[in-house]
Amino acid sequence: MKSIITCLALFLAVHESAAQIKLSFLNFNDFHARFAPITIDGGDCKPGDNELGLCYGGIARLYTAMMERRNTMTNPILLNAGDNFQGTLLYTLFRWNITLEFMRQFNFDASALGNHEFDHGLEGIVPYIEGLGSPVVAANIDASQEPSIDGKFVPSVTIEREGTKIGIIGCITPYTSSMSTSGNLQFLDEIQPVTAEAQRLKASGVEIIVLLSHSGYDRDINMANQIPELDIIVGSHSHTFLYTGTPPSNETPEGEYPTVVTQAAGHKCLIVQAKAFSKYLGVLEVDFDAAGEVLSWTGNPVLLDASVAEDPTLVTMLKPWAEEANIIGDQVLGSTAVYLESTTCYDGECTMGSFLADAMIYEHTEVVDDDGWTNAAIAIMNPGGIRGPMGESSTITVNDLFTAQPFQNTIDTIELQGKDIFELMEQAATRPAFKSWRSSRFSEGRGCFQVAGIHSTYNLSNPAGSRLIDLKLRCARCRIPEYLPVELETWYVVVMPSFLAGGTSYPLIGERGRNKTVGRVDVEVFADYIKSQSPIITAVEGRTTVV
Image (cartoon, rainbow, N blue to C red):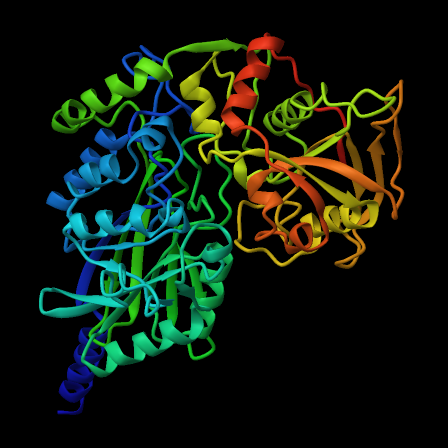
């Protein structure tokens, strides 16, 4: 009799720990208007290369990959983590209209909002939300002062699979207002509103909680540690590549897929993110027990290379949009003899950043008030404004330029004192990040400025606030340009994009700068530079040094 009872107890223990339900999470993030196939680094795929199998991603390939798995995997959940807007000429020309046309084909279980969804004001996002036909979730946006968008999104949505209730909460980086045109919306720190919504869902009988986050990898890890109700976080915003095992392409993983956070009480939360630009589809299968606790998992981002067929219906749908855009986009501006790469621009000096900064200086070489060669000998460019490479083939087209520079900033000048420039350069390495980004030597700050006319040296092992150890600036009022130690009280004319000159991202620029001038739109400046300087030859030449 005793042995029968023992066997029964063992059976019940095994039964309780066995999987109650399997869920399959299919997701992509930071699409950034990559409707057409892309190069290996996210640039514009040249005509004919796609047919040769040299391209990746694109909306039709992404759709194939997601729909095939939706139709074959157990309890699929389709999620979009935001930043569908902005990034290519197609978006610049057609904005929310083209984005809505294609995103509503997926019929997501939920979508998050990204900061770039607000780049063209509320009038640029409200029609998209209204037409999407699937829930948009954001728990940490207070829209009470903006009636045009208030009520268009919800904090969370509850879905069911095999009788199990799954709550999907949304959140967005709390720094969105300083990165976009979002009116009177208030973007709150995520912890309190997400926690409150998760607790409300649990109290209503929801067993599994998913956070669809557009806050970045580091903030996701923080939320996984602080919010015990969370089981899964599907992330975005930081373009983070996570992978378990040997990666299939040229990215270096920043962590395992999923990243597992185990709280003090033993509860596990799994975090995933699938890079950016439609190159990967995130796929994660998770077994949960009867209490909604994670038991086991398997999955990885799936590389969307030429082995993944493009959905013919979406290819046909894209054709008229692309044909109209290509009338402009296929125009050749010039050529480059070197690869202007953008993947390392957060880590230090990169050729794409140096090229752009040089072009900004060139724009002002004809403006001279007195004896010298220019009024503006130094330029800075935020690495987040560099969205792709150029030069994977020798020609540079309008499409290439708009993919690399999609934001339509103006190239402005502003006067700053040397001490303010020093502080600004220090902030690149020490200011708390608005968003976690790629693994970077500058990961505690905003990322390395791309510069012209500036030589900076950093010791990143120094305490925050003392990492910039040397700064030299190129003289303007001189017949022979040379780099001289910064003079802290001297006023310098600095060229920068309007995103920086506005001061919302780096307040000291707006607070301490003087005599601001508004210049031409960035793509006009860069197009003229390409035309006049082709072939472009830009080297890595020690503008930024880390010791």
